[in-house]
Length: 352
Ligand SMILES: [Zn+2]
Image (cartoon, rainbow, N blue to C red; front, side):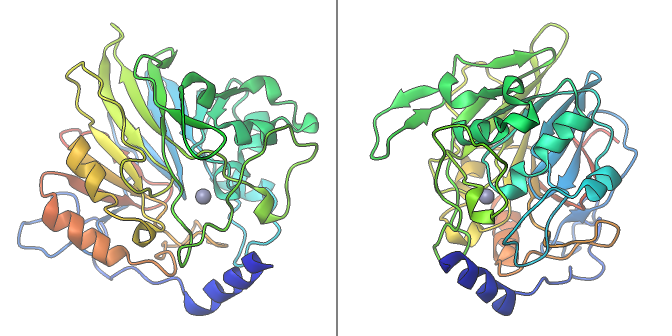
């Protein structure tokens, strides 16, 4: 009941906001005198060289050496208030790029806006993909009629178990990369920011397999929220690009990767813009720690019943301009990019 009340309240107090006119694309190659700190949006397509495609919400698609990697995509995006949620087959068919070559799907947590579409995508569009995520995501994907239980790996089990106040806590194991062809990754303990007014609306975990897919939004429990460190490897197995990915804002030190003593910096940090005002020092503390060349901002657009054929609008009830101004003034060496859903971003600035 509390959930329904808060969702109704959000409907009333928060409206999706238009982007500031005229700022599209100004993050790339802008003259230094241009004031572009509000929304560094980009909308690029058909780029050459290593690139990543923003799919909207927490979803991203990497293509490396002809091998695809998906970060939990969401296209169904039910309208506000999202109380009963179902995967929308037509929207997935309309907007999902070709993912036949995807072997890895990384899931940071099991809320509906990160996991609802994954079963259908695995069954119908990515037949070779294995999903990696937390135990709760595994119990949801184990619903018998999905026939996906054998295509899920619980990465919490590959982390160190540590003592804490809750039943289970894990920490990243710096020696425990999962390698699949030219990609390797490790899970990092992270945290889910409260959604609104300090309240996490969808907290909780599952400890056994579900018999049917959840429909009520509250039953898409998050489980342990994970971040990921992802290395794209060259033919000799060395990391060519290092990417840090989060699908939820977190308080430090949640989301911080362990020290990897190989001299390789993080090239690209992918952050979650939603709920940044509900945590402290996000993403600032991580930016100070990782010094990424590029900061990709995801989960920024209003995705409730959004029309992906139209220009995106800013997510309701957020303080994104404060965050963007803080980053652009405090981290001048980091290129900020806030891509339009379904647009591409080059992994490095010197690549066209
Ligand atoms: Zn979430």
